[in-house]
Length: 143
Length: 111
Ligand SMILES: Nc1ncnc2c1ncn2[C@@H]1O[C@H](COP(=O)(O)OP(=O)(O)OP(=O)(O)O)[C@@H](O)[C@H]1O
Ligand SMILES: [Mg+2]
Image 1 (tube, rainbow over the protein chains, first blue to last red):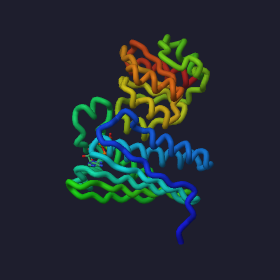
Image 2: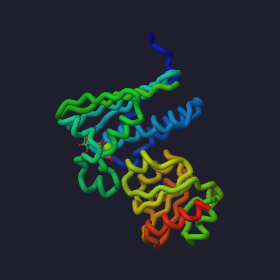
Image 3: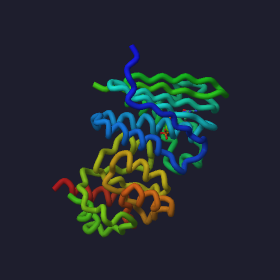
């Protein structure tokens, strides 16, 4: 059965542009808060979207973040066109990062983003093809 | 402990959002890695950091920090201040190193 959606939207993300990094996450967090979802759900969704957004900006050419909110579920799809992730298990390891100096100078590139997403989600899947792109599928249960 | 009393006791320079200093500080978090701060800091914390670029504001806003303290003489960049004013996140600065700032705040909050 398909649950009725309370909200859905797709946000474009431009690779390499850090100027407005975090805006999508903030916008969704406010929407989730206004819908009356608990603090913990707001926090988890915000972190998952923030890290997805930053990875597209840091590594890909362009991407989209699609957010769907149902009464009992938040569904986040972050898909990009970019280099893809060659070794997903290695990328998931805390501390592994290929971030360049410019990114590291800003305090990104700790190699924590993907594992933060995993900790915040009830279901997390990475689909990636080298030289094509990456698709993160994130589910957060609300109950 | 309110942010304003923290500002006074540590003699911090208020770089923006003077009108937002009477909020309650729940604790602090010290770090320059944004993913670490996003994951581990809490609502109402003061964030002690040496990062001064504009991306710190979204992190503080997302985590609902009471404010950001730039240490060791770091000053916010122009875009950082613009964004902080819009978001209503106070930015404070000091010449003190992070270790000392954290230690003193810890003592103050513990009481
Ligand atoms: N969308 C993506 N496209 C290509 N490579 C990616 C993508 N997302 C992550 N990666 C690769 O996986 C690594 C680990 O990502 P993760 O988000 O965990 O850490 P990070 O981005 O390096 O640092 P942090 O997120 O802590 O700032 C990245 O350094 C990069 O090599
Ligand atoms: Mg990352």
